[in-house]
Image 1 (spheres, one colour):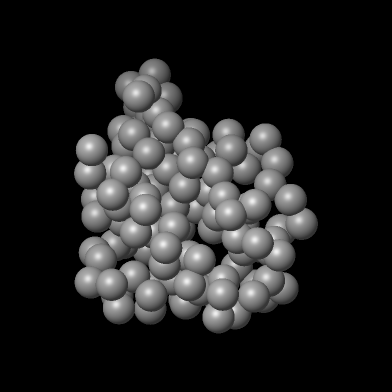
Image 2 (cartoon, one colour):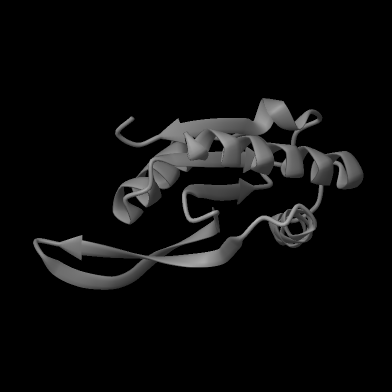
Length: 125
């Protein structure tokens, strides 16, 4: 499954960003650094991907913006907060459902060890 390979690459890139910068910065700094790291790994991605929503068949327009879409298959949402909450997970699950993507990564850079701030969420797998 390509999503698993892409998620491994994204996690590796995020670990490298966290190793170099550590916790305590703003989310925007981590997003910029992750962009650079993904480019260095020759990985295609989109930033601030607009996600449209429908209500009873009516287009609501761009309702959400996902931080990253990597290799057109893995949504990545970044945080720099004390702790991830169920609301953060619900947000990413909504992005997955609305964009019809199957795999998402929720990454909180404000942790002493990045893997403690990592959640892998799936949609209809």
